[in-house]
Length: 222
Image (cartoon, rainbow, N blue to C red; front, side):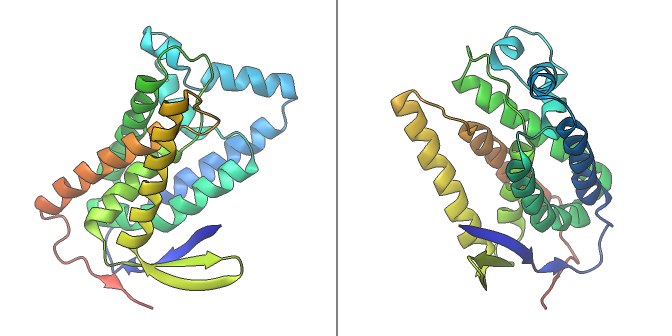
């Protein structure tokens, strides 16, 4: 497995309070849910996770937001928070705190809707921040394609460009997502949430670039 562990940082800009704050909130919620019994955790997921059948019938719409802060296990949490740590701060530093907050939630909503579109009758709750983080990654690809991502392969660190790392990542999501449609087995990963979130992030990234928000923003190479 290849994991991102860092990147080139934006010089100056806004303090990424929401990027880091969301990491803290997700960890706290996970610690709370970890204290529940298995039965209580199942009820927690059903209550606050996004269930496609219910959302598509106009029920429990609030779960579109609450599901972004719930994770199935510690590996799910760790993976999502690692990607948040690497990619979100540059976007928030560039576009500002309030814009990032709106962008993050819109990305998460787009991801949930993408998942629901392909799983309309599913009663399985979808949880996790990966859809919103996918939007962050899509915007990152457009805004900072030349940024160098520090990655870890087993115990060996090296650097690759953002366009290569993120291009390979979204290719993986597309491959698994289309395969899940072909065999009718979505499995335990919401591939189309990732794809929909990423697409929304790409569009947002182009809008951010055209708006002039990136003027004066440079990457600090270490």
